[in-house]
Image 1 (cartoon, rainbow, N blue to C red):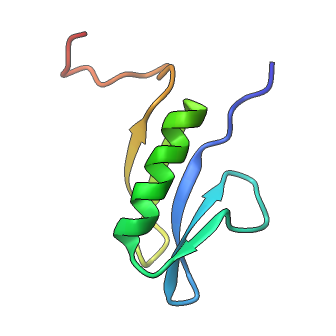
Image 2: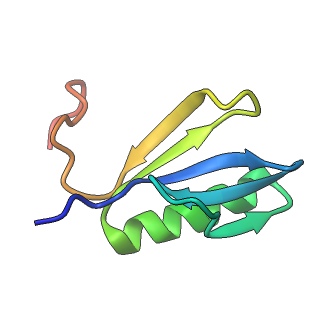
Length: 78
C-alpha cells in the first residue's frame, strides 16, 4: 500500500501554491494564502491526507489532518 502524500501550502514567486509532498511542480497557484489554504484543504479532504501550511519563510506554521491520523491530539477526546 502506498503512503498518501501530504498537501503543502507554500510561497511561490510572490504568490502561494499548493503542492503534493515530493512533487516538482505546484498543483495550483493562487494570489493569496487564504485561497491556497482553501483549495489545499478541499484537496486534502478528498484525498484523506494532511494539509501542511507554511509561512513566507518556508517554515511550517500549522497542519490539519483529514485522514487516519496515527498521532491524534491528546487534548481531544473522540
